[in-house]
Image 1 (spheres, rainbow, N blue to C red):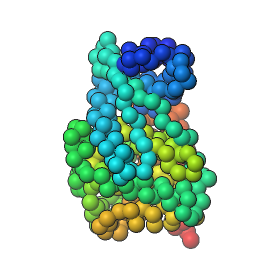
Image 2 (cartoon, rainbow, N blue to C red):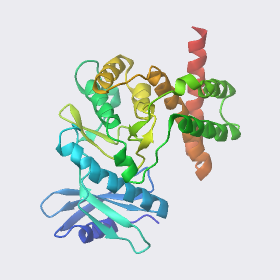
Image 3 (cartoon, one colour):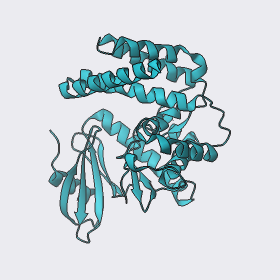
Length: 307
């Protein structure tokens, strides 16, 4: 059963000495966490997250370790944005810990508002590139996963096989994806530190720039295309050049000529992963949503092929 905001406020009070919680509101969290924003007596806001499972608890511990390492790169100016700063933890009766940090500044990114030029679109490109330039040791030290290029291609193939086994992926899309995954030349990339779950809710914006990046529990050493896929799929087409140009300028020794192609493919494969999420958890509304999007993608690829 999800914890109430009042329960989470009590955990925040226990975690941070002197925190005088006055109100709390629940926050929707797509992960396996109970989350609330707590306001204290001085009007400061705090975010408290408590895992709902042992697996989520382990992920939260690893994320906390990573955030501690990332603070060095924030304070030294290597990263132009902030990340959550853990202020305290509270032991949970069933095991694991809740974590508390000051709420970070910014509003969720409005992807559709991106425009070409040196503004927010270019800043996004630099932000993603700066993550990819981080030393992989910070991921290794936090106990988070690391993959080489071939291992990662095999993981993608296994996901596609599982999606195909549902019998609900359009055959034309299956053929398209299988061909891309079997093209080894497409998957020659240098693994880097990736956030792993970038999206509008994790990228916060203030004063026309990225102010914070949250939700680091899926960080790993893997394919840089993972962090670019959502932007290349959802950003206005006219803004994509600005994103990619800024990204490439911020990267060192970038020789991945198939990066953008792979990012677009990863964006498409996200629909198969969404379908699998619905099937695995018996979520009929998620399955229906995924099938609608797969049908739309099939129509769009058919139209592209016709031209």
